[in-house]
Image (cartoon, rainbow, N blue to C red):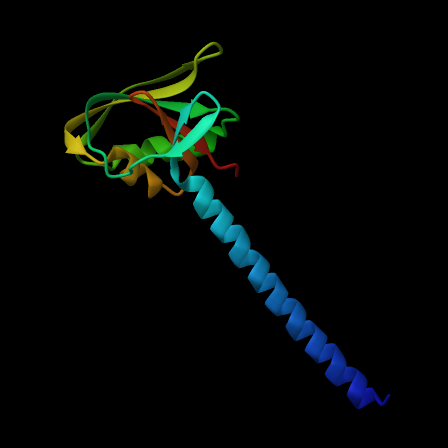
Amino acid sequence: MTNEDANEMTTQNAEEDKEQVKDEAKVAEQAKKSKRQAKETKGQETQEISTDKPYEGTVKIIIQPPIVFTQLNNLTNYLKNIPELKIMLTGGSTREGNKIIVSLEQPMPLLGVLTECPVIEELGTRGRDVIVTLKGE
């Protein structure tokens, strides 16, 4: 095998490796998108829920641990920029975890709005409460 053949083979292998990395990145991105889909938990079952269901009035957003506080601040800032939404209370306790209570001035698809928030990894509901898992940093 000549040096030229070896170089060509190495270049071809490098290109194949790049394509494989791209494919793996696409699969990982699809997995992230799937995780971000809204879900409703009932016992051990998980069902997809509608992200266009209108919410109105007072809603509790419960943040699941682990909580990265910079991401929690980013979520709060995101919520502050939604004109029809007012943050009524933010807080946390060791027993109940962190929560943000919001008031919606008019009906809005809150879950759909939250799916657009870049710091949210997973979103679901429990009754009328919205359950959020934040991305790690």
